[in-house]
Length: 243
Image (cartoon, rainbow, N blue to C red):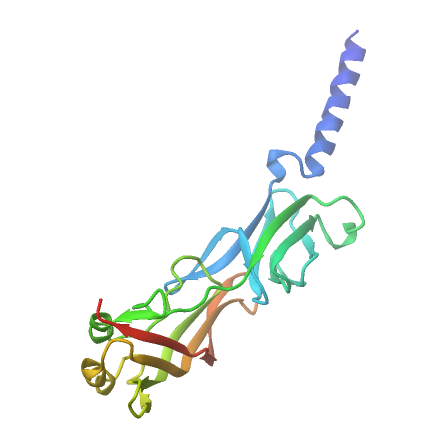
């Protein structure tokens, strides 16, 4: 009887070991974290959504397997080593991420399968307008233009460096290309808007912004924030309101 009990106990141990190694045990939870910029810091958050055509740096880890690999059915995925991966979806909709214990086991069942929504990136708007209507008071009060993306964490960051303003009033000659003072609305533009009627259109054009993004460090053991030059952003237009 003792022999039978020992054999049964041994079989239970073997089954438990196999169960854990298949990634179903709590000690082998697979974690997928997005890496984002918040203010001037790098933060890790559980990955929830991905942006179409935007390379997203993620970290995939497990308590049991140190050399995970992954594949995606939407766009591309690049192994950056040390559990860092760059995912770049191409199509809005869904992305399925399959995670394997190492590169030699892609023909086996994955340790974990996750599905994510792929969405269009946020529309960048100036801080003083959530629509194309801006009150005269807001325009005259707010001096610094930056882009409000506080509704979601992003793997990149823009800081406005320069822009130009054009003002068009119905029945009057347009005023073109008033240069900004860095990321500030120029006083000349404010003085003109003071005298313009409601319905006047304002165009922000030639917007240049300093661009930063999260990258894997050269030793592939950590991530850091990298400034990556200046990029042009889409023009914006607003209509002045007195309300």
